[in-house]
Length: 149
Image (tube, rainbow, N blue to C red; front, top):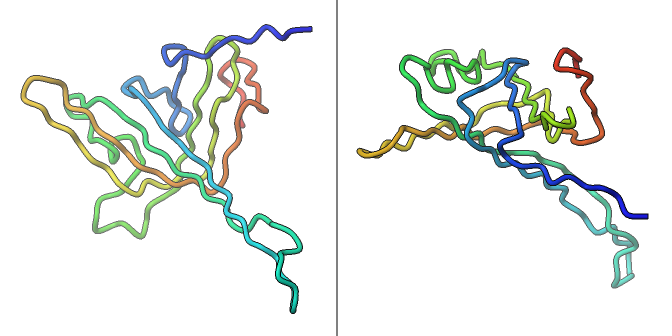
């Protein structure tokens, strides 16, 4: 029996930052890495097993610049440089609006970089790089947009 799979298109994805729809988001990338480590014993040339050791999650949110938006600071993702010790986590949810399925969800994200691309004959676009403590994906289904994750 074949499954009826629907390919998710970028135009059908909504991005929420701290529970608020981010209409200026024009793209996003994320990656999750789990490093492994060999468990070795004394006087044995081969490892006994390969075990996971550390995980990390990072990504980039691409946004459009609008007048007076404040960039990452205006979105509440960063603080001004003198207050860097007061930076707070933000939540990020990428949702397929057709199936109400979470494509990517991370509750403890921290912005690490912000960059802007200014072209004389184009729009100003920005990139906000983030790291996250943990994340989840399609295993969380949303009943409407009001469900708290």
